[in-house]
Image 1: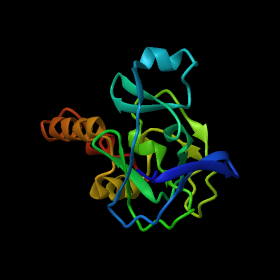
Image 2: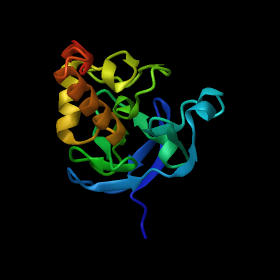
Image 3: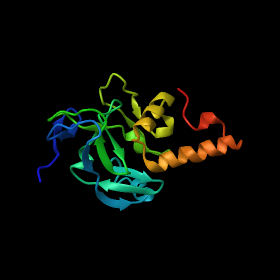
Length: 173
């Protein structure tokens, strides 16, 4: 089977690139690796490589997956916890990038962003800290990790019962 992607040098070091054209909604790859805990990521050995798939569950990404870079204007996104799809048409030899924030809800890790997008937010941080309009866009696209969507639903339910103010559900812009 011919690979869908390849790893090559880019302005950020290494990047993940399309070995063929992808249409919007098309499968690109499945993120794979060893399942690890938050505690293991916090020790530093795995910092920057893990993909958060639940509150205390991460995938220690292996190549080519670990070479997927972040963008504040991504051309791909993750569905079903570890499946990368195109969220717009991607052309052969174009770098494939997703927004790391769509997978993060731990209040622990941030990174200076160097994506170069006109919409660059400057810092990569947890989903709930994204501007409200960006959160809504990603939720509508279906590319927010399922555990984060559940968390938002629980917070929304609690706010309707008077437990939380709605401003806690989605960050203010």
